[in-house]
Image (tube, rainbow, N blue to C red):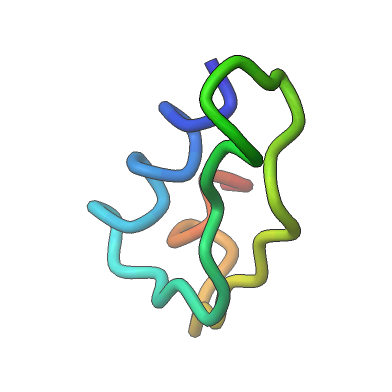
Length: 46
């Protein structure tokens, strides 16, 4: 679910500064994720 949001933001033009990926194979924890976006729309916040 969370990775879907990350992928969606990237498709809308936001740049991923740090990796938003799972920590380990069986973990539900997502590594810290930082985006650079020019607009709120690029982060799905419209």
